[in-house]
Amino acid sequence: MDVPEFSKNSLIIFHLACRIPDFATICKDKHKFNMKVFDTYVTKSNSMFKEDISKNDWDHFSTVCISVSAFITVFPERLVDFQEMIAPLINVIGNKTAAVRKNGAVLLAKLAANEDNGKIYRAHHGPEVLMSLREQLVPQKK
Image 1 (cartoon, rainbow, N blue to C red):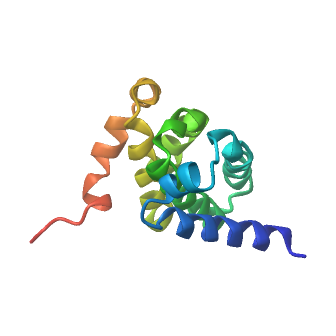
Image 2 (cartoon, one colour):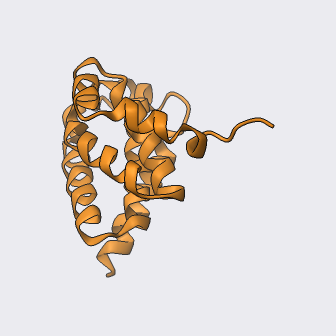
């Protein structure tokens, strides 16, 4: 089995599941999941994120960012579980381009919406980095 490819496909499938309307309600009410059931996802996502940066695996990095973005949109109570991504995201966004930058910026903006995460985001100059790149991240109307 190709573990990296399996890992990537698992993230994509989970991302798609998070897009199902009322996914959180289905998990919590219908299936009686508590948030602890997602601890492995959180741990593995944080681990893959770090590994992708260290290996310069930007394709997989983007997949992790997309997956985590979907997850925290559905389960905002888990936002603080991804605090360790904030400072590296700011660095990556400031130094990379295209999809890597865009997917990282989307995740960073979602993470910064939490009050505790926002403090880390501001301490690492996240707002300044995003503002300096706003023309590249958001196409301007002509």
